[in-house]
Length: 301
Image (cartoon, rainbow, N blue to C red; front, side, top):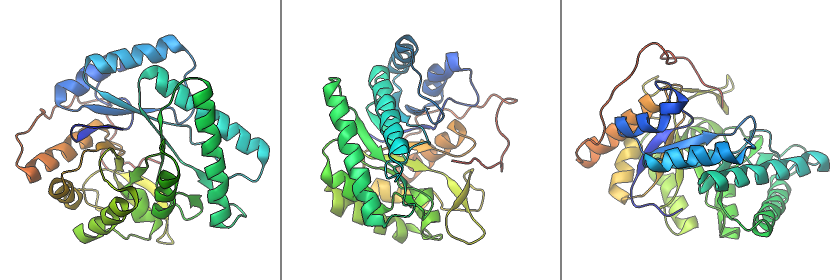
């Protein structure tokens, strides 16, 4: 996905505005992206999808889309795998109609397979989804996401591998997931640098990435995600060290906030980034009290 700058926005409609006012409100407070959440089901009405896309474009909001969670492209059960392929294709179709250029998805689970075998089944499924899109005369970017549990396909190396195999694939990098998957591996700027160096080595560039960010609580075992949390919750990882890497490297990303506070924390991320870069703040922090989720409440993803 070609980007001319860093964009920030929430994972889903804002908590401090109605859906009818969502994109206008995001623009008003200084945000310019949103990930449409099709995580439970994919909208089927073209009229609805086009209206969402038109409203977003009118307000300068770049859309991405998150496909349903109920995907397992590596499933050994062929019926489940076929259903997953169809759901991912439907998500791509919805994104196309809406005008979203990037579809984030969780690839699936290893199950009883060796990781290499599960990855090959995922590769085959992605190839089929791309063929289905071409047959339907459209194409959107597929974004396999780095996943938060060791049981899931979606390590950093695996999403890089998928991007190397297909021109139509560019990963979604979820730093909270990587942190949890690797047992709390992101403790400072040098850890972000390690991840970004590997991404740049594997992809050739860091530009055009869709980034997910939140703080995250791990399971009792100390490995794997349990719940997403607000910025400043104390769970980590911290955003500022990443912002410093972003500024130093001059990246062009879509940064999607996955904390329970959605656009409120997305705006905080933007403000941190602008402070680190020395840029003039581009939005006004403003919240409408009474409708938001309370601080400290986790969000399962």
